Every structure is written in structure tokens, then in C-alpha cells.
Amino acid sequence: MSTTPSSAPSLPEAYQSVSVPKTASSWRRLLAFAGPGYLVSVGYMDPGNWGTDIAGGAKYGYQLLWVILASNLMAILLQTLCARLGLVTGKDLAQACRDYYKKPAAIALWLLCEVAIIACDLAEVIGSAIALKLLLHIPLPWGVLITGMDVLLLLGLMRFGFRKIEALVITLVATIALCFALQLFYAHPDWGGIGRGLVTPQLPDKEALFIALGILGATVMPHNLYLHSSIVQTRAYEKTPAGLRHALRSATADTVIALGMAFFVNAAILIVAAAAFHAKGQFEVAGLEEAHVLLKPMLGGAAATAFAIALLASGQSSTITGTLAGQIVMEGFLNFKIAPWLRRLITRALAIIPAIVLIGVSGGKNTVFLLTLSQVVLSMQLSFAIFPLLAFTSDKKRMGEFTNPLWLKLLGLLVCLLIAGLNIKLLWDTPQIGPKGVIVGALGIAVFAAWVQWGYKGKPEVAKPEEA
Image (cartoon, rainbow, N blue to C red; front, side, top):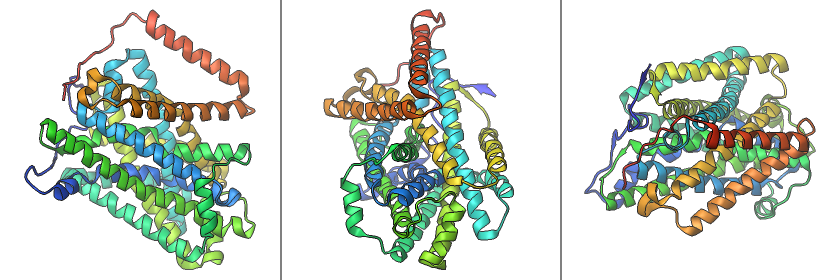
């Protein structure tokens, strides 16, 4: 373990390792930038999304499709801000938080982010283990162990270049999309109901709010914000104002296209659940295994097999990017570097242990609830990532001419307040927490913030980023 200077690049083993041709056509330069968006997009179609989308489709039909659309648009906005932060300042979001906040605040944000990564990893490990059981009849505990370790082998591709990782992930994403296109073909959904669900905002009851927040947490994922702000820096583009502007446009296009595919997959999961389960009176689906069993008589064996293959591809691709995000977060917040394999091993262990415990306690049943709960935990962490992100990208001293324009600042603030407000509403309505819990929590945060601002005597680590 060794400390690194504050100016050390994010993910140094891949930093500026992908060349962007200076004299090629705009199309070829755009293709050179394609990749980071797809690595980010897998987090938007991981097994946690499956749990929330299946629960929403089975219980409410097409009524929550608008939540997926709204969440995806929010995700595009926030991921675009991440790309801007990384390209303009040369820092990822974790490094920016460490450099501009006092040490206790930075450590608190790091701990919250680690909780989010564990919740995300839990969903990915459980999803992949279930897929292995469905395809190869491997018991869930053994599937968890296999899933926890195989990502280390996959990440060994980093030794052969970051493009190899991107190619693998894009292949897995394409596999997921093709599998769900096949399932949509067999499901024969109600396209009129789909159209109404996309444009008619509604939350029929409190459980719908719980699932909607799960969808939001599964779609706009905190660790993806840290990941994206780092991996856009793998591109070695021309270091001029014109080169930076082209890099920003290319990164934005990459993000929009990749997250557009993620929207298709998420919407397809909910649509298939609505057509196969809700339309036939099956309003409760307690586990992904149950969903697979129910799909076979309703849509046929090919659709059920495609479901399992897509689930495995989803879990594997998500564990790759989730482990990379864990490395970026630890190195960025704590300003020290450990061997990448050791960091990935720690990340896997933190996911495997809770997964085995939960599977043991639940007997491998009710996995949809476990996945949905993990995504609600993610949603709770979002505000602690998106408010700093908006603040950093709106600061002219840090972003120079590339600071957020007024309309983007207002839109970003609206999204941040909406996410925070929905989370507070869910906690307020939860019997185990209720108004008292929300008030106590808010007071605790306020007291901690006041202590950091006026009581903490240490000096913040301040590093002025290079101007564009």
C-alpha cells in the first residue's frame, strides 16, 4: 500500500491508453470514443434492475414504464455531467470530493459509496448465481462463490488493454439485448398499454412508490457516476480546446447511445413481466427462479432459456464494471493505491459474504424482494453523489468555459431535489422509520455537517485542478 500524489491520474493502469486519431474523420474519432458509455450502461441492466422491473411489471402491468423512461433520462443527464467532470478537470468524482471537502466529509462520502457498491455487488452476485443454477443446476451457494471469483479472471484482460474489457462488455450487452428482443417476440405485449405506460405518470399505492424507487436506484446508480468520470480519461485525445470540445461531444454521444440500449433492456424486462405474468393474473413473482419457471409454459422453452442466458450475461458484465468502480472509489477517496487484484478481491469478498448470508437465511427464496431492497439502498445513496457532482460541474473555477450553463444547473438541481424528495417520502412512509426516523436522521446529518464546517480543526486537502 502506498500513497499517491493528489495529481495522480484516475485508474492509472488504463489512463490515456486508448488513442484517438487526430487526423481521422469525425466518424472514426467518434468510434474511438465509443466504449465507456457501454461499460456504464451495464450497471443500468444488472440483476438488480431485473428484480425491480419484474416486480413492477407483474404487479402493475405497464403502469410503471414511465418510471423507467424518467430514470433513464435522469441517468443520461447525470452520466453526461460525469464525463464532463472527468474530461475537463482530469479528476474522477471521488478525487474531486477528496480534494474539495474536508477529510471527515470525504470519508463519510466514501463509506456511503462503499455501502452502495456492496448493495450493487450483492444484486449482481445473486443474479449470476441464479443464472448458473438455471442453466447448469449449480447450487446457489456454489454459484455465489464461482461468480465472486470469475470476475478476477475476466479483469485479467486489463493486461491486454482497456479495449479488450470494453469489447467483452459490449458483447455481453449485445447478448442481453438480443435475448430480450426474442422474449418480446414471444410475449406479444399490448403495444397500446406500453404507449400509455410510457407517457402517463402514476403511482397506484405505497408499494408502487417502493418499486419505483427501486427502479430509480437500479437505473441511476451511485457507483456508475464515479466509474464514468474515471474511464472517460482512458482516451488520449488532442489536448487543445478544440480537442476537448470534440471529446465532450463524443463522450456525450457514446453515453446517449449506450444508455438508450439500457433503456430498451429495462423496458423489455418490465414489458415481458407485464405480458407474461400480470396479463394472466400472476401479480406476485417472488424470485428470479420462479420467473424463469413461469416463463416456460407461458412463452415457451426458448424464451425461458434466453431469460437465463441474459441474466448470466447481465451479472457477469455488471461485476466487471462494479469491481472497477470499487477500485476507483477507494483510490480516489482515500488517496492511496493498492494492487488492483487485491482491491478486486476485497470488493468480491464484501459482496460474497452478505450474499451467502442472505441466501442462507432466505433459503434462496424471495430473491426479487432482496434485489429490490438492494436497489432501494442504492437509491438512498444517490443524493450524496449527485449533489457534489452538480456542484463541481457548475463551478466556473473548476470547469472554466465548460461550466454548466444556467438551464443545465436548474435542470440538474431539479433532478437532484426530486431524487432526494422521493427518498425522504419513502422513508417517511416506512413504518420501521417513519417521521421520527427521518427527523432524527436529518438532525444527525445537520450536526455532522456543522461539526465538519466549524468544529473540525484539520485542514482539507486542496488541489487546484488544471484549467482546460
